[in-house]
Image (cartoon, rainbow, N blue to C red; front, top):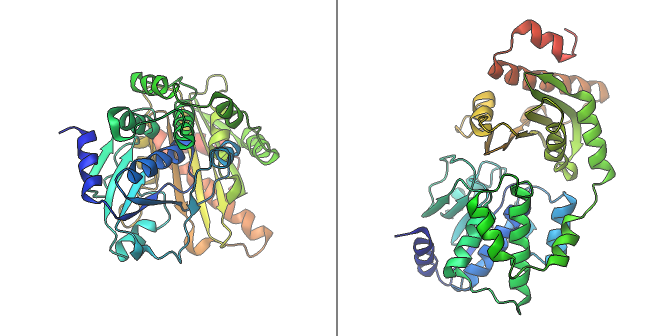
Length: 367
């Protein structure tokens, strides 16, 4: 039995239910569009789907995508009554970047029904249905579902034009404008092009970078160190709403001559005083495995969930600061940043096998 038939049977089995669709903490066009598609497909089976994320939507293109296409999703509120849901669906993630929501679902006895993703398998969720493919985007997988009959797109229906436009945007962004696209991604894009709104897509993709994003890229450029064709940059503290600037900075640093991989990281300050050490990795080296590199470099928490992971050509990591979160004063904040900056670089250098003397020479922090 193929994947399409399996997901149809599962949705038929759960008709009349209410599901929670969980996206990663800072959802991108791939996650948003896949969730939009899943909601429309669920409706065909009389299933109501609420879409939540645990962080913020901050990238200008993502904000435009949600507003212009009318995609209905909401930040997760800990006061949300999870008991109202009959099951959970994880899209474009496997529960490692949702800030404790997996445990909350377990406590509320909400089973994981579906996982659809294109990142490397993480092994921490046990869903009824799992479709993890090595393709350019989760949007590609959902386009395949639609093309195979899970949703019959019609050019005259506003929501169908919107979902086709969103999915195409998801494929474009996650394949770096088709540079990293495979045959499946091109095929999916060709199918979606029949239904998408080209003017709307152009409007979404032509959003300008904000001053805050440009400032963070400038900080990354000024703080970078170059080691064995890797560019590594710590950018200090940043607001949660500027988090999407980190992968943009990594993309920028990765374009420098003789650099094949860039890692950018900083301490993310949440509204509730929580702090998280967050980073992104981008690479153009085909033999470089971001998932393996980040897992081996940063390890896992006591529950054996890795702090980092990734997919082909990209990855990220997120480490809660816990007890050390918060600032007593400016001097303490600077001292804390130096400690974490030192530790991140030490982990990366150790993974690279860089000698200690070279490490101290490159590090820029006096001992």
